[in-house]
Every structure is written in structure tokens, then in C-alpha cells.
Length: 347
Image (cartoon, rainbow, N blue to C red; front, top):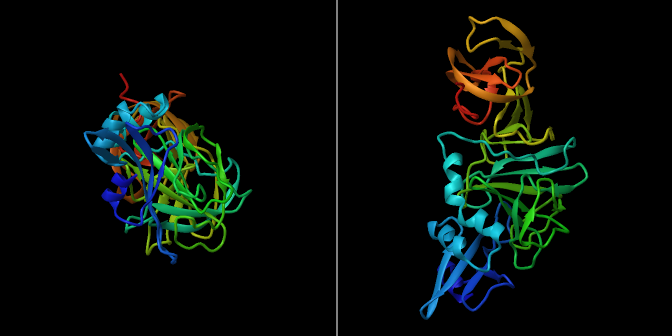
């Protein structure tokens, strides 16, 4: 579509969906990367509407993309809900310091894959991505959403647009599925780890380049959690670590896939591995009714204020969480992805 090329410049690969009509256009636009190490392509979904003698084009990440997407008749109802109403869904995701994704690692539950590359860019300077390899080599969707094949060749790169304003990219795939807005469930097979560079760049050693997007743009993956591991960006690009409770795995180590952390769940992190006291009320003046191991997953029923405590990275709070078994723990020692109540306040 010439209008998209006019927006993005020559050299952009535009793939128009077969369902496009004389009045509506939809598809992908990719600016390929040079065939060089640490070079990555840039890609967008786009929606276009004929207006007068030309086309009104909106790119993923622009406010108008949601506006046009909500009314584009060529999109499925599922796509219109996911792409067109994303601005409404983002209100929760955009709360201050809210890093909850509800995502798993992009491979089978119970497998351990090598953490081959710490936070680094997909393009630009934002360290939005990590590299993983191993296991059975099958790359799976980290969360449910609508999926799109990005490269014009149909090879190498799949994007899944999720709820709450998030999307994930999977690059270097071999034998990937060909999709144009199809709904995929969490755990759906997307492709195999590989070295495909259909949209440019370079790859050595089969792996998946896994990237996080939020509100239509790549975001730093630092301190977001996948498969109950909190990704940490430390040092230079490709360095870093991951935390599960107090267990720290550096690049080169193995990441066991525990599954997604629910939006009302947390991982016990005592910042040292000690056991965490469960109490009968929100404060240390209440009796101990049990203990939790570092790394345990807890489900939170509601939250209230109590005594103040300091956990990892000097996180100090008086927030306490009542668990579904009725006991209470300090939020200072539970990683949820946000310092705010994740399931409302207790009444």
C-alpha cells in the first residue's frame, strides 16, 4: 500500500491482508534490518481507511490506530476488541509501577531453557528483549491474544497482541505458524527456535528473541515477570539476570517454567531465602499461624494497611496482603509487580 510506504519511507515491506477491501486496508509494515550482528527490524500493524481521494493510515502505537481499529469492518470482532478498545484496557496496565503481565515463559511448563541473552534491544536503544534456547525447541505463546506474522515472507517473526495493552514478539523462528489475526491461546505453538533472519539482522545458535511491547511500542523488559521469573537488566546489553524469590540466575543459567503469575498472585521474596511468617492479621503484633518458603506462589484475596517493613531494593511499605487461606503477609516480601493492592482493599 503506497500510503504506508509514504509514511515510513522506501525500503519498507508492506504486507496487506487478503481481506482488505476497496475501503479498508490492514496488514503489516516492516523496516528490515541490515544483515549485521545486533541489528533488528522494526515492524507495525497498520489500519487504513479510504478518505476522499486518498487513504487515512494509522500505525500501531498511535491513538488513531485504536480509533480506526474499533470501526474497521474487515477486522474480526476479536480483533476489534483487542486492537480497537486497547486504550480502555490499558488504564489498569498503566497504573504507576504496575509490571504485571500474566505471562509465562514462551516454552512448555516444567521445562528448563537456557537464558542465552539478557535484556537487549529489538531496535533502538530500549532493552525490550531476552534470548532463550533449549528444551524441545518449541516456542509457545506467553499469553492468549491475536497473532500476526510480521515478515512479508511469512517466516521468522510472529507478534501476539494481548490484553491490557501488551504484546510479545518472537523472532528467529523456523517452521512458524502463518497467522493474520487468529486467536491463539496461552501455550499455542508459534514456531521452533531458529536462526531465521527473513526481516534482517544476524543470528548464531538457534534461539528465540523474545520481546515485550506495551501500548504499541517496545518497553524495557527490566523488572517484568514471565513464568514467575523477574527479569533484571544489569550491566551492558545482553547481560543481566532473573529472580524467582531470592533465587538468582545469571545469563547462561537455566530458567524453569513455573507458569504464569496470575494478576492477583505474588511470589514470596524474602531477599535472602528465609521463611516468611503468615500472621492472623495485618501486622507483626498478630500471632504467627504458619510459614511460607521463599519462592512460594500465593494468591491474594485483598489488602490492608499494617506495620511497615522493608524488602528487596529497599522497598518499604505498610501494605499487607490477606491470602485466600485467611492468613496475612507483608507486601514487602511478596513480588506482585506493583506496590499497590492487586485485588482491592479488605472491607
